[in-house]
Length: 340
Image (cartoon, rainbow, N blue to C red; front, side, top):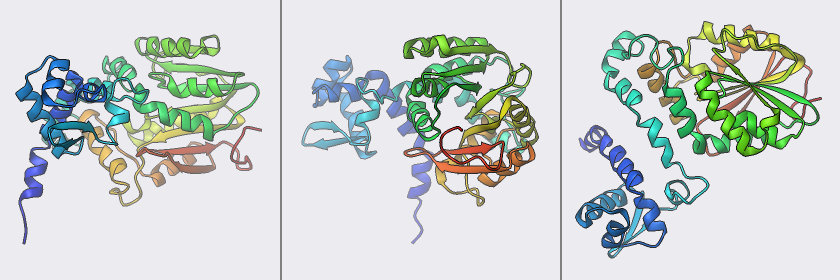
């Protein structure tokens, strides 16, 4: 028999969003990890009402973010690594971007965006020049991008002198990871200057600042130069229409050495556009927040990149992530793995 439960769960899904945000802001998950396991103990640690904490923790238990035995709460195994502030994999800080004013506004206008085929934010949405949201992104999204950055550095092995161009570098983690793995790698990072301030901080903290240069400005306008072994496009193409992506990929092709490669990290669904689910659903974020963006399929990326001059591509699923890594080769005969 048909049931309305699924509809009611969907229409009230925002409540879980705000419950998690409250848990992060109050440091409820960290308090529990520290050994405060009752509503009274958590309330004392978080300077909150015992009643409020009890209701919040019960809700998070029903939602499988916490576990409960008697009157005691504990972290769910999927929660502990990511919402305890003491964990190196802590992701609570991503709330600052993912639930920031700009993204909330963009989804509030989703009905209009569906009618229009693009954001209702005005202009090009978050893609307006030097938009302040990207500095927030660079600071907030580090924990979420650390694992993919490490995976790419391990998958695309390099040795000896290597020159890397990191387009829309943001926090800089992807280029920095390559520099950490190869002490002879040099990185040139392109982004708005205010965003590059964050990347410079991270490069300094990682001990690679001497091999980390920055190139402020729009990736479409600045001159990249030549002689790069690798060009990184991480979470960038989905903001634009396909002709724009193709144009930028041609520019990258010209900047690469004959044996160079372009590395693209993206939410790239299959041809059916509904699988894998998280990659497919990302298209809605682009509809709400950009004028022209989309979640392009693997096949569409391969077509764009082939049109830009790259004859061969490899697609690698990134572990524990909804994203895929597309490795595009400037020369057909170059083997996978280490640079020649």
